[in-house]
Image (cartoon, rainbow, N blue to C red; front, side, top):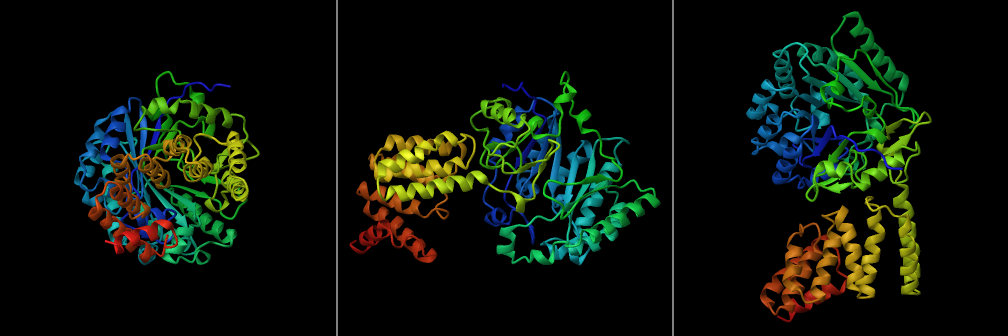
Length: 519
């Protein structure tokens, strides 16, 4: 079944992993602390210039305003494109520092979705590097900008408030602050467990999760009663906690949200296309490596690469056709590890602690069997693993697990460089920054005496993330009889191996040592 062409009306830009905060329960703590991945300026300009229909452009991170530091001129591209309605998902701390942004907000429509919870010292304790005084000043600034516009202007200030044992007790005080400031809406969201935050910040999640849902609902009811009694203009929504994983309840006190469907309506677009289910969603996420995923939870699915193709062509390519066809059956595809399908057929994002990557587990089992066979008969092991390829999906990054093993066995055990390259290229098509695949490609170039090409490939890698790149550059230089240059890379390779206690039992480590010691 072919699903008809769709019209894209929402783009999420995952601009950067950099962030000026260190929130103790950050779901992206691992990538935030690396902080070195972001969309290139040229790519950002190119995509913005492609937008030719009314589209909500959602700017996320990391912290998106960190991305725009020292390149505020990019705001001109966003706000000067009349097809774009911008939404900023931000911690709000840097707004006052970005004068060009403030100027554009004063003259254009926008949504500012600020993540904050707790009051005073509690806010600062949970959101490290944050200042309660500064954030209140900043959201007051945004509220004043919105108030200065004509009544009914589709500009909006929303607060995303994470419910924890501490913040739920602060909720009523926060509501009163939000009313005073002039916030449009507060959305209570449940806390998600983050293994990386637990490891990096030593966060004790058991001290944060609300164990008694009745206590939570009592606090929410207090807010309802208060808002009703005072005939407040503040909108309020909340999600259930500790419910079944297929029972996410969302209730809205007073829906003051402006009609984005109308705002983003495309002439001639049938209303039934605008649907909340994944099968009919009209959006995608642009990842920092230029790949495109269908949603922020489905990063394992790579639908295309906007360095190579137009965004509208990607949105209706064969990968998207396959995804929509599979979703339209009402049965969750096995490659969708980010969603749960309810009995009523609706889709809802699953709590991260409930997500199960079934394909990853299945493929790892295949690899374990492959490794057992490999010790006995290399050809039979290859035949077994290639026999599982019929189960793979070309746009699912889980497939790279199998392709990486096949690329390795063809490279190292069979010296069949054409077959190895075939699998390497499949990996790089959906994971262009996969260093393991890039290293393998460089090794093939070295083994085929294309040393300069190999060095060029390896120089494109962040060497501190994959120290093997130092070794193979050194090896390529050694083969070119450039001994002194070679020894520099070997020395750095040995130094990093010793510091990280990695690769010390490998042939490469011993070879590099011998070259250095023998002069």
